[in-house]
Image 1 (cartoon, rainbow, N blue to C red):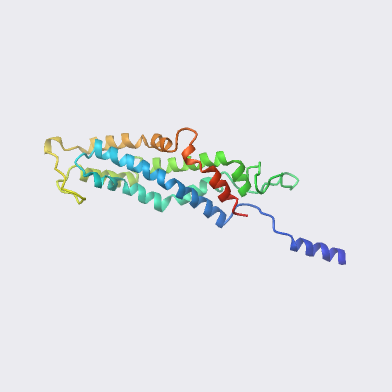
Image 2: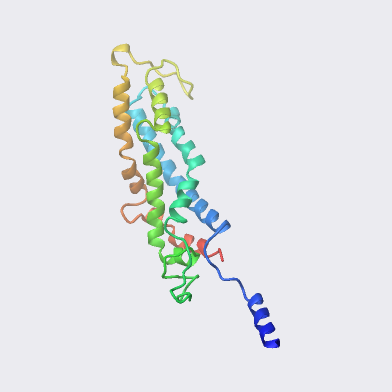
Amino acid sequence: MRLVLFSILSLLAAPAAVLSCEGECIVGITNQFITLYAETVSSVMDNIASQICKDVAPQTPTASCSAYVQPLMDAWNSSMYNPMEHAIFPSYFHGKCQNAQGVDPPGCPNPDCPVVCGTPGSLVHFYSTLQNIVFDTVNGFLVNNTKPNSDVYNEIKKAVTAGSSTSSRRALGPPARPYPPSIRPRAGTIDKSLQSIFKGLPHLLQQDCGGPGLPNCSWETYMKKFILSYP
């Protein structure tokens, strides 16, 4: 009886097995990637805004160009979390790491787990895959939100159409000179120009990330340490 009781007490005293990255771990890692990408995405949007002002609405004061992509920035700030979380957890990293015998392989759950599962150690081991998942999610979000007839695209198109044809704009600096009626951009021309500009988004994002290997959007050393800060 004492042996049985001792065994039960030992089990109760033992630390609980880590099954997966959950709760604060999921939220923290997801938000950290979004935060790290914010500067890159902002740079891409600045580039897009400059192209819009140059090719579609040249009458717009330079200080006002960023207003054209504000709907996309608003979408990023309000709606990026869910697709990012889902792409990482549970679309790829999820579940236990144990083998068929119910045993954790060496390095699992932490610090370097060679099994695709839902623990911090697995995210660290497969960090190059995680890095690509995050990039693809950011790229997909920007592309989907700038497709013709998306809400964001329509908002941008409406603003650009107004900005390219109005004679007065609220901006820093002197009022913009209006287009003569004979050269005022038509809606169809604006549509084609915007679609052409937005098609370049994936290239701009990859370029800002340093090319195919994404060296500027890796943050590997920092993120591995951050990920392993969760038990």
